[in-house]
Structures are given as C-alpha cells and as structure tokens.
Picture 1 (cartoon, rainbow, N blue to C red):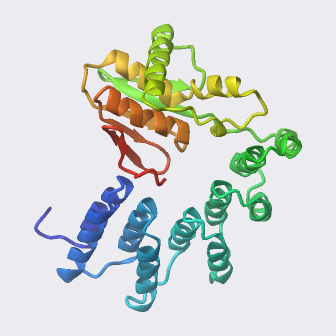
Picture 2 (spheres, rainbow, N blue to C red; picture 1 turned 180 degrees about the horizontal axis):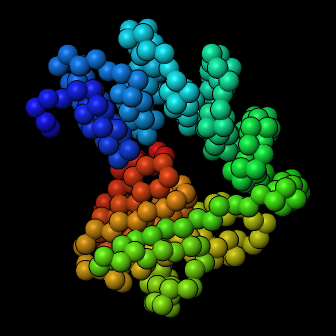
Length: 313
C-alpha cells in the first residue's frame, strides 16, 4: 500500500476484497483504516456492506449500516439501501427487507425492487414476487428482467399457464430477453460463447470435452440440477439444455486449449446458474485447475472442489 493512504485507497482495497468473497480481510482493512485515523465515507461503507452481502454477514452488515447513520452521520443513499435489502433478502428475511424499503426517505428505484424480487425467487415467495413485479413493471415496463424473473418463479412451482401468460405479455410489448454469453481468453485471443453455441471452429471438440468432464463429474457425485431449466419439458431434455450453457462451453474450450494446471479465467454477463457452479467445483478438483469466473455479481474462485463464495451468492 502507498504511504499516504486516504479513504479512497482504503475503499478500493476493501471493495476488491469484497467482490472476491474475502470478508475477513475486507473487514480487517476497514478496522485498520479507522485505527489509522481515516474516517470512512459513504463509499467505504458501500465497500464493506458489499463484503457483508457476498459472505452472508447479515447482522454485521446491519450493525455497519446503523453505524454509518448514527455514529458517522452519513445519510444512506439508494445504493446503501439496495445493498441492505439484498443482504436481508438473500438471507430469507423478506418481510424485513420489504419493511426497510417502505421506511426509506425516498422512493425505491428499479435496483432496490429488483433485489427484493430476486430474493423472492430464491425463497419461492410467489405472493410477494407478484406484488414486487408490478412495481418493477411500473418503473421500467420495457426491462426484460421483470418478465423473465416472474416467468421463472412461476416455472419453478409448475404454474405453466402463468408462465405462458407472462411470456405472451413480454412478446406483445416487444420486450426481448438479453442473451447470456461467456468469454475466455486463450493465447491473447478472446473466444465468446452463447448457450447451445456450435459456431466455434472447434465446436465438436468442445462438446466432446464437455461430455467427458460431465461424465467424470457424475462418477464423483455430480448430479445436474435440472431445476435451473425452467421449461415445461421432460427431465432428460432439461439435462441436455443445462449441458450447453455458455460458461460450460467456455470451460470446455479452455480445458482443450491450455496447458494442464493453468488457471482458467471466464467472464459471464449474467449470474452463473447453480448447476454450472456445481460442475465448476467438480472440474476444479478433477482437473487440478483453478477456475476464476467473473459473473455480473462477483468473482468465483473454484479450487480443489470448493468455491470462494462458500456457495452463497
């Protein structure tokens, strides 16, 4: 670290540790910052709250949120509230998250309602999800996420008529879902993949490798988590759909294109699904590879069958 450390320097370090899932180190630097006489500002609190969010430190996060307001007289912005709503929501404390939104001194934006909406899906609270979805549609009627998440929630509980109703509404309003993609860099060249992609010149080898590692992972105990495929199709078809997610294709390509034990780095534009996350853990152990995946939320470091997120993301 530089000799002259201001709150910006500390904040960058804490934030970097936060998105890599290193809460103990992030909190250690936050405490050290204060011990050296540097008062945290709103950005520093955003950083440490992000660390709490990515590690499930709910009570610690709530204490820090109160400390920001009452000890340091820093008024929370919409970003601070969004983090705390997400923190409560991921922990299943949906009623508390909703109460916090309702007590905010300003109108909640799309991000805040979106955080609660994602939590409703994770904890299968359909009643609250339907209420929140209406708020989201009022704020941004053209945003595909509102429709996709609600459709997914209905699909998870088998309400296929409601799924079709939401998808029809989406189509009639001209709203299109953002495609998921992943990319990996090999020998200075970036290779991009989308789900079910066969456009790559080594597609046949990629799918052969993917089949190989999936078979090996099954022998080690991996089971495809078909609940992440939200179509009204047979289970065998769901496994096929899971098998061609973009991050899996990027992984298979990296395995056939790089030296053994070389770290694999993948970037994905959406949140990694639970099934892909599970397979990455198995592959990191079977192939003795560190796999670093950056999704829209955070970094995941897979090493020897364990992810840095502790399966909390």
